[in-house]
Image 1 (cartoon, rainbow, N blue to C red):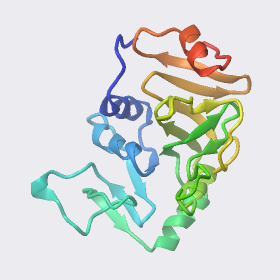
Image 2: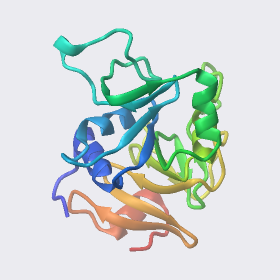
Image 3: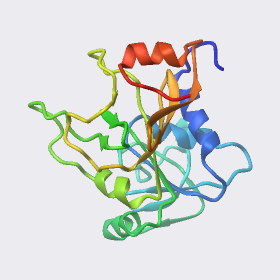
Image 4: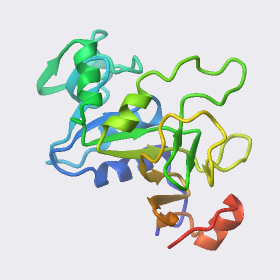
Length: 213
């Protein structure tokens, strides 16, 4: 058990540890893109970017920065040996056709049934379209979520039922937060790993959920 809460980079490295050898993976916009920087040495993971790249590498150093090499969030990336480029439509065909082993997405809310809400809070000025998140959530064989356990307002992001517009129902397998890692099970959220010296009872008190350990 980590006796303190992990940094965002440490959480990304923890996710990277759980990605199996040879997996084809898409990383959602935002914090999930950090995962590409922490793949354990010697492990082959093939990263897909929805803007048309397979074989994406980690973020570049200032000396290696190429403005033509970007991910879907317009962040600079590198290319691995054997990287391929293709039309946007082909990229979405890969996503929708079940060719991705795993995707790591951010979230506004995840329900105990694995429902994902990550594209809009429904508030004025919110993001106007779902983008590729819906295709990833239903097309990838497994969906991991990387997010804070609590919103800036203090409300928990893990809920019994999502109140925000859904991206996809019953798609999330695991949630990585700075307080704990949770699996989605038929009986609700199960605590897989916990940080900062907290207990499942502490998390239940703060989230209002019934958690399994």
